[in-house]
Image 1: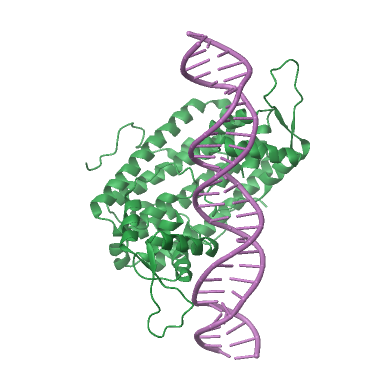
Image 2 (image 1 turned 180 degrees about the horizontal axis):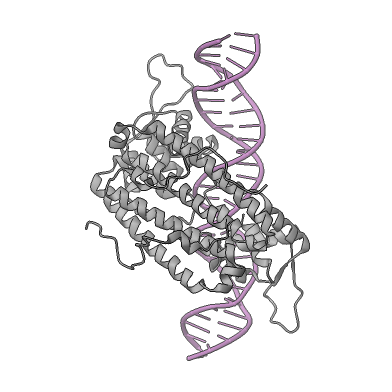
Length: 196
Length: 196
DNA sequence: CCGTCCATGTAAACAGTTACATGATTCA
DNA sequence: TGAATCATGTAACTGTTTACATGGACGG
């Protein structure tokens, strides 16, 4: 995963390992974290695979810092990864789909559309599985004695429904704030009213 | 993580390693997977820590199969874990909050409430951070040239909003299907209409 | 007696994190 | 001149997955 994130960050220009971290932090940083302990070894690996290269010490630049550049082979590998279908049930936990979509701006529009459509289809399938589960568990006894167990199922359903809404918006390239029109009741900075 | 899941599964009765897998699969299996390669070593570890114990070969039961039982120390450790605050930004990726909530039925109601309220508070904070980010990136240029990058931010906002809705429902112990009333447009089994 | 489920496990690999160690550069 | 930030890296550890290896039990 991280190897592709790094390639993605290098896609638009040369960076040091240190910079890569910065770019990750204020890019996908909201939902993906990476430490130096993983970034530097990853860069070394990418270097071995010739997916990135070291820029020679330009001019009188203070050397000990290493500028990395993505190679044509690296671009190819990255775009290939971007074009691979997104998994709806990210078993690995990591929200890998966001990591991919984040870079879709560099993808030909048509391919991005196909990817999103496929992702939407998978989510719809997943939703139907969850709805079937819900029907099979839908008994007064479960709602009484396994309220929280059930709640996790409903959480899953809610998240997938939201994901589908998002997919449709993205596929239509509509402005996203439309998603939140009406009932945006969470703007306040305040605390929820919880028992003390 | 898995160690607590296993303890949770053993909380309501003795199981073999094989059974544990089964229970995980048709319990939290929707959002958490575990392989034998992790379950068996975990059981061994829990045994070393005396959080579980082996039931002696009952009667003339065909032995080679190992029945595990949670110890009082194990119950204590499990309940302690359940009582620890849930992280809103699960950096590890794993939807750890669901794993915890799944077991909340065994928690004293008041503690479950406090946990959910705290979780809601963290999510609200998180949402506000995302909304601040959104405001800082909200320019026509970004919406044009970084549509997909922006989309991931809006996805995050959507998911957190949905999480908050879910939290409020859970805290009020309301029936969850209320969450989906009106516009449940996804019941169909069909494919989305995507370009071919 | 054959396939499928029950049942246990290990070895290697993977994908990272955490904590540490080191030193240069910048700027107040 | 000292603190913050820039910059690179390693070693040990964690928590898993994947693939493999083995064999008993049970039903058709």
